[in-house]
Figure 1 (cartoon, rainbow, N blue to C red):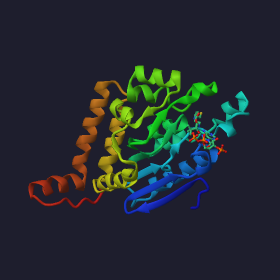
Figure 2: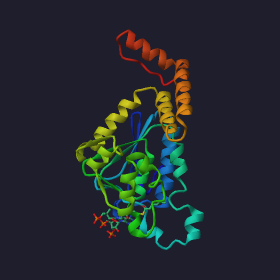
Figure 3: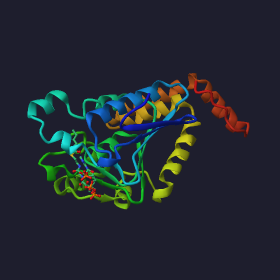
Figure 4: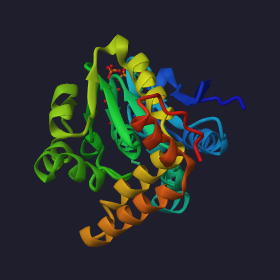
Length: 258
Ligand code: HXC
């Protein structure tokens, strides 16, 4: 499939998606979000792909929703069409790990898109922010909900009230970013991590994702029970027997993803 706002590529078991609207720093519009939903779903359905990496350019992951496409919307148009967020539920339904590799600006909807991913790896030039207040709106795709869960209430309020940008170093210290890399190494390092993950059993990666996601949705006792039942279910898989046998026999495991 050829996209107008994305580039996709397969590298072994890793599916790579690059946002590609360079003239507007990868600003998000409905076409891009529709194509992103399509590309993610295609990798989700492709059996050989086990991990997905989402990235932008060296200058911008995404500088937010497309302000030119948004400015003249009426309330009813925004409300009825769910501008750029109508596909947010598609992103949420992806069950394979999705890693964000963020260089440059991740602002507004761009920061919110990065937060939809399971892990954020960032370049040392990355800048995160929710500058919507400067445009007379508030974040509309999770900034007031996911950001406080990621960095705590104080920093989330500070960022949303002032619209200031968080440096890559601050974002890592605050827990928004998992690891930082020099800009030139961001994508190769993220792809290396993705390949390492993709060698592990797919069903285990999916269970980890489901279980950690529930840490934000369920009361602790219910989350712990969910985790324990998934742990027990692993004993029905080939890969659990193989992983534990390989350890005891001091040899590399040969996982079959089943
Ligand atoms: C449309 C954008 C854009 C955006 C940049 N551009 N961001 N176009 N929507 N969000 C365009 C610029 O107009 C410009 O086009 C070109 O990209 C390069 O940007 P510059 O501003 O010239 O680059 P620079 O000086 O390096 O500044 C980079 C920047 C700045 C700091 C990222 O572009 C900026 O502040 N952008 C807006 C960030 C923002 O407010 N994001 C939140 C949007 S609201 P020309 O034609 O002049 O070359 C949002 C709500 C989501 O995201 C809610 C979801 C429901």
